[in-house]
Length: 403
Ligand SMILES: Cc1cc2nc3c(=O)[nH]c(=O)nc-3n(C[C@H](O)[C@H](O)[C@H](O)COP(=O)(O)OP(=O)(O)OC[C@H]3O[C@@H](n4cnc5c(N)ncnc54)[C@H](O)[C@@H]3O)c2cc1C
Image (cartoon, rainbow, N blue to C red; front, side, top):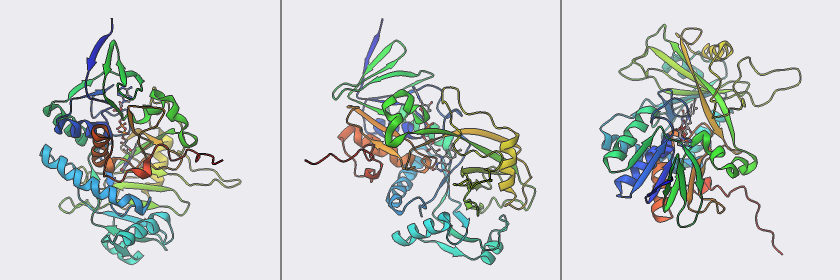
């Protein structure tokens, strides 16, 4: 026997993006159901590990800046509504060679949008940021409008507020099928079929499995493993009254890694690898423990961290002063990568009634507050004034042939 339930909008997956969309819908009085296969704030997707960097001078492209600015405003709204601190405003420090992507990209975005930033020489870096063992030729960019967002706390806050505003939240229940339809898309959860006006699909690493057509978009969506490591601070102690900035650092071989000092009263510095060296030349290999490109089946989850991961992270942490040589704990996590590493937000014509948000390519969390607003707008009105056009899921389609 199939039970049938009706609602206006279903949100499939209550992680970073889905939790915010559900809250936005519920506070606007839209009848909505959110379905999450685990419990909100879990550690089996892409949104665990206690902290995510938020920066405004966006090195991935100046065109992101208006969207980050919208996200800052939306984080303020969530903080005020929940009464919780969800963003730590520590500033961010970028380190690398003067021509590295991390430096040139941040400066280009800051200059294009007139954002406050400071360019630092190697001597200024060494004096002002002694945590970093600066190499000859390295320079820095400091941005005050940056810091860390707390992922699990944000998801829990958004889901709690969504419930309070009247959303129905189904947890520990997986969506097994989504049937697109322009008027009444349907979602299957066990023996229950939910008939809705719109379905928002925010299933993270599970999106390509749930809607198989999306797995091929742009040449292929890839789910990859990444590992985070927490290194004990041995000295100098982090200054918790004025938190040390979060950072991203590009190595001479192109590896890009990042870290968060002082998130736990200065006990540890957490680091992770965003991208490994882009090229492996003849006779050379990637560093032991490289995490770039290792595919993951989200059904089984990423391989647990091992000794090779600890050594890889330890080799990078050698660029920090006053931390232990190996991590005291580690966690595995998933990136869902699109071919151009830009997000997927919007509709696909062959999936009528559905609104997708996925492929956040390892840099989506900071935008979750604005993504939630955009998804709620799209579900309710069919349009949004937020700048999500560059994330159009149709962007790779070949242009129609002209006679
Ligand atoms: C190690 C790491 C470091 C990162 N660092 C940063 C950073 O510093 N700054 C930044 O901005 N971004 C960062 N990111 C990226 C950011 O965290 C992700 O882009 C973001 O969390 C993705 O959110 P999501 O909602 O798409 O996925 P998730 O948060 O994983 O949510 C998807 C949810 O859908 C649920 N779900 C899936 N299938 C079903 C189903 N069938 N039925 C019901 N529920 C389902 C899942 O259980 C999950 O809860 C990082 C990511 C990782 C992994």
